Length: 373
Image: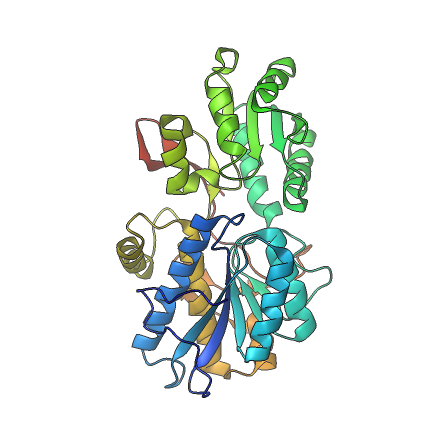
């Protein structure tokens, strides 16, 4: 079902008369998807569509977003890609969850539908190299290496990961181990299928871990684990981390209050945004009624790139896919260009800016930059 039009977007209904150029948008807008991330992603996508149309559209034709809610369901996402392809969209944009984006990318590749993935980071977005898919977010192996460097720089060598079963979490654990082991670090896996939050605390003590990384869903079980660790006097000195970015969003601070501060996570923003980024920040803040996350900027940049490609090469899908290596677009976070990166099966922006940040304990609504990569 198509989502209701947002007040941000001047385009509400799906047109069928061929007057518009349509982009299919995949976003998680209902549970068990990460809804707040989906809302920020959609806000960025919609704002960029509005800006493109205010500037004349795609050679005089309005750009239209056709939104589908993936709800963090890979099968639902694949079905949406199939539907959008039949509706005649020129390209696909979006998706936040890596496992969902992987299913969407596989279907887009099979159908010959260009897909610019906004936020998912799983390295193996497709099983085989493809010309049809490109990505803005950094590959997980790159971003999580930056996080591993941060851990070592802070003196952490015994790192526990509280993990749920998932291709994404398993990949993150492997990356951390590969980065830390050669430099004397140890990764201790805690299986959340078998451990309660209280049992996690006992394991941390028994294993003498100095850091705990939450490789787990938001809000649960991540929030309950944080509360348990914060209240355990035996763990007063342990660092809690969340490389996947759970503390980025307001819901985290609302649910955890002061307990949600000082939990470092990965964020894909530069220290200073470009003039375009500053203007987009103002517009997004007004629409969202809160500070925009990096995910909102990923959404805006996605449409900015696709609009540039569509203006230059038309709405032909094959020509769009062929144009990835020729993209050179100024986005909100820097100049965007795609290349073939070793070990990555899709066209990749290598690399967006990466920060390790946390919420300031003295002012939890403010973020502190701890490390850059």
